[in-house]
Amino acid sequence: MKIPQKPPKTAKMFQSHHDLKRLYELMQHPKGQLDDRRYLHWDKIRRCSPPDGLTHKEWWYLLEMGRRRDAAKLDLHDRTGETFWFGMPEAIHEALHKIDLGAGGRIEFPEPITNPDTRDRYVVSSLIEEAITSSQLEGAATTREVAKEMIRQGRKPRDKSEQMILNNYRTMKRIREFQNQPLTPELVFSLHRLVTEKTLDNKDAAGRFRLPDEEVHVVSGEGEIYHQPPPAEELETRLKKMCNFANGVTPESFVHPALRAIILHFWLAYDHPFVDGNGRTARALFYWSMLRSGYWLFEFVSISSVLKESPVQYERSFLYTETDGNDLTYFILDEIRVIQKAMDRLIAYLERKAKETRQAEAHLKILRDVNHRQSALLQHALKHPGYRYSIASHQRSHQVAYQTARTDLLSLVDQALLTQSKVGKTLYFFPVADLQERLLQHR
Image 1 (spheres, rainbow, N blue to C red):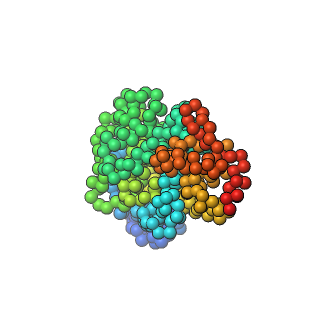
Image 2 (image 1 turned 60 degrees about the vertical axis):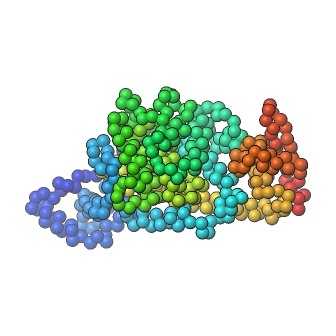
Image 3 (image 1 turned 135 degrees about the vertical axis):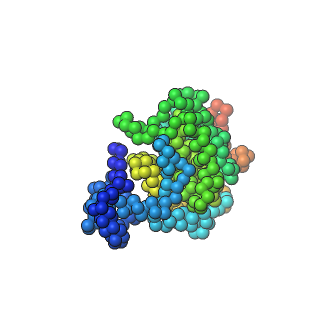
């Protein structure tokens, strides 16, 4: 991906008497022709046909004026001291309203996540999904099934990729625990230590700022520098400013809480305060901010799974912001797209799983003999006949006590639906070979 072309400088476009006359004419231009709903970057604008009577540069000048008119500034600056800012086009207002309705309320959500008896299973599945895809965005290479098996079975990671995924899973669980705490530099360092444990070439780099002699750049696959973060000497001050923003201390004007979470994601990624693990830490802070603001649905939403599908679009949103005078609106709009897609995907998934559960329950007629945890395990076993379960994996999957998990599994053994076998010191449980036929007998 090439770095987008920077927009032309418009400040000196109208200096002569003739230019001022043209400027007056532009001010009379019908604004209805300047459709800015797509919020295109100059790199796109220059390839489009301008509205009648305008050159590309004049078109850009009018768009830029409109965008900056009601812009909000942040206490975030680039390497040259220029301020980051963002606008509020209609698309953002509309999207934030939908997020409010969809992620903070409890109306018309599928029963599995509003039912206290089943929601923990979906929380765990979502935590695993986010852990896997967030790690894959940073280069982790392992299959989803292997990663899920590692987490559910509680085995030790075999390589760096698996360690990254396990770290992310633990981090996401920790975020749920301190979502109501204010953000501090110490908490940011703690998150970074969690996501980078046993994955850094230099173990001492975990939980601390990068040093002046540790140059960090964001580069393309071809080695082209996309982003050069601020100097290490500025990081302490910048992190304090970021925490003030995250906690609502700055700015004095209202910033929508979902918007604040999005900007926080960008802020840490831009500052790149660590030698490695910046992207994972930034996404973790996004989740912390969303949950702290009451968007409970984000216990289940995985934004990384969407980002992984379009990494170039994700990277381009950063580049658009940096090449167009620090206009954060590009990043905000793309992150909103990701959030909406992730939320839609979650609802579709839950509705599908709820339908599958209803069909299985109607077909197998086993509700009188097993509880919802056992039912989930049996449905999983039908699709994965060679899978092995342990008391610990069942406990982790459903967030229940050890004794509860043990009772669940031994009860299924008593019903001849599972067999048990000891491997080393661990007791494992396996689906019987004719599981489907035996389940049908429970009618």
